[in-house]
Length: 94
Image (cartoon, rainbow, N blue to C red; front, side, top):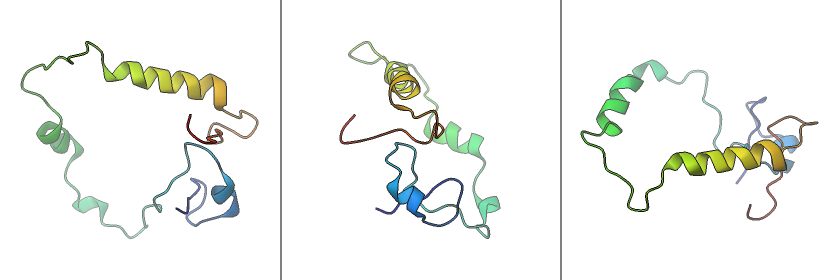
């Protein structure tokens, strides 16, 4: 799909040729979008994400492990710091 760059509100060659995990596949939010009609974020979190009781993972792990592993690999192994953190090569899988 066509990708967008965070610096522009339109598709560009730079965004198309950017092989990073950080390119956007969704178009940016239009300036005339009625975001004030959206519900309060706190209410959404309380209705959807808050648990009444703790449910442990059967494999005794957590999502924080996967998050840290992804952060570690993106931070040190694949980023092209000369171009900035948005340029991370994503050739194929991982």
